[in-house]
Length: 168
Image (tube, rainbow, N blue to C red; front, top):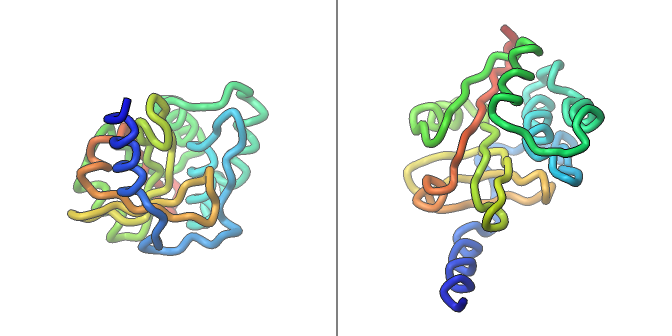
């Protein structure tokens, strides 16, 4: 039991709020709503940030259609395909794609396992990815930025989507 508490303390210490590499205006951040639409809120936030019209109001649209919340990579990809959004999908850790997203200041919707709670997955908006650390916004806590060591992030990333500002 003490080992579990210590492990959680180390994770929390390694994911302290910080400043993101590029700023997403507060009015562009779409807060998550129960039971959990973090992926859709994160995609809409990037859509607002990059002025991608078809992503605007995505979270509300999805909430109206699926009261259960949550999403799978297939659901997210199918929705983006149907909206004719240009994007790149990464299953697991694709270092080159995440570095490119950082260099181009595109950001990425990244689904992390065991964040913020063990046994759960959660989508965040990555704004910086480098050899030492990763920065992100969390739609559960609008106005907060987080930073984690790359070693922690590499163990927790499940899948991610990088959207392009231009449509297909």
